[in-house]
Image (cartoon, rainbow, N blue to C red):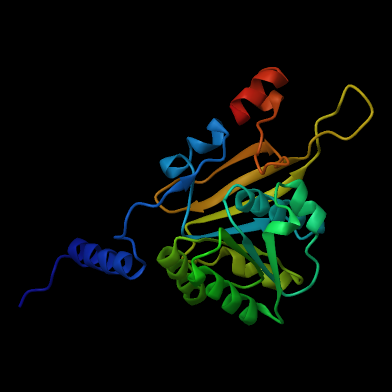
Amino acid sequence: MSALPAHMVLATLRHRIAAIEGGHGPPLAVLPFGVPELDRRLTKGGLALGCLHEVAGGGNGAVDGAAAACFAAGIAARLPGQVLWCVTQADLFAPGLEQAGLPATRVIHVEAGDDTAVLACMEEGLRHGGLACVVADVARLSMTASRRLHLAAKGSGTTGIALRRWRRQAEASDFGQPTAAMTRWRVSALPSAPLPVQGVGRARWMVELLRARAGESFDIELEACDGTGHLGLPADVAGGPAATAGRLAFG
């Protein structure tokens, strides 16, 4: 019996992997960000729902970590229903989440002892099927663990966000390893635009899509989530006055 050509072997393997990961199910629904300059660069025009995503801060500091958490909160805020948020330490800042559109009344807070317990809670939450979104703070995420989470999310249709946080620099190297997540985002805080009067302008983020299945990576400068969980396009980035940028972002 002659051996199959290499391309046929690869095609067969890809088909089997897609079947294992549930890739032959119904098409995934998407959640548009409401910023055309961002949505048109995403497959199907938005963030795929009912699957696993990864989000991390751009640096090791608390500011970038908070920006990543608010980015995740903004996504969860725009999904109807309760949100399960799993952490290893009781450092979840409820006012910050509410500022990104996610009030405390919508958050079920779970404090687990370590990453293993957090991942177990996340998987249970994803399999439950009655939640809008499950967010989990984890330092390490292996391919095996991410695949279990991704399959749980696809089985119930619940969106999962692995919020990658590191308390030691050595843990950050794990972020570059492959996982089963549909997308991988990195969010960094930027200086806000100066105002014509005294005060602090709306926060800005550098949002980078580092990895996307069937998509391309990119980065874009955006205004942070508002009280409804929506991002905005800065007026100077849009190339027009603030009013025009507002229409692009929220219209």
